[in-house]
Image (cartoon, rainbow, N blue to C red; front, side):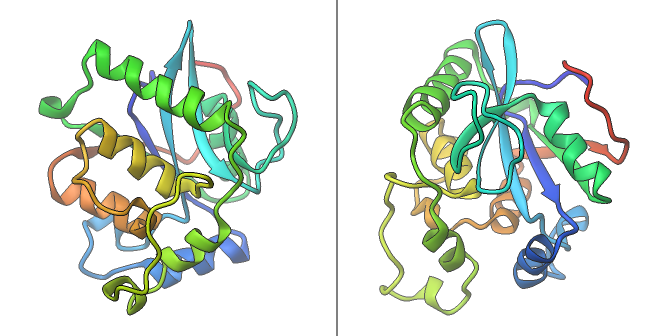
Length: 207
């Protein structure tokens, strides 16, 4: 499958941390493929003649395409290399794509890349561990004690939610509230994104 700008990768890891995230954020009322919540999300964007997987993480063993070293926080990689990391460990990666009416136009694809690369990856922002932990809370989400948005650091679904809000594909809200499961459930329920492909087979082929 050829990746498209705006595709979202829903990653289902098998390590203890990933399974804990999924267990704490799952919902039996979610769309079928999302009842067991993803533990991580990434978004695809075009950059020059390449197609890149953009994510914010502390767990990637590969050097960032831009920084040329392993980092924590927003970073860029080849999509199939990162998919292979999950599949070879016994997990899976589902790809979600904007529905036809929500496909990105040329200017939106350019904006997506600009925000992700220039504002997030090249800015060397740190990973937002506190935000990631708070996003999974259920009661705190409903109170005024929940912290305001802060783009000085980002976790995985916070990054994706922020750029989708900028593109008008997700209603304006505090992106820190979106853990991976909540983000995908919202996008699918509103008809903004749809499932298109699943990767159970490891590969490191470049797109």
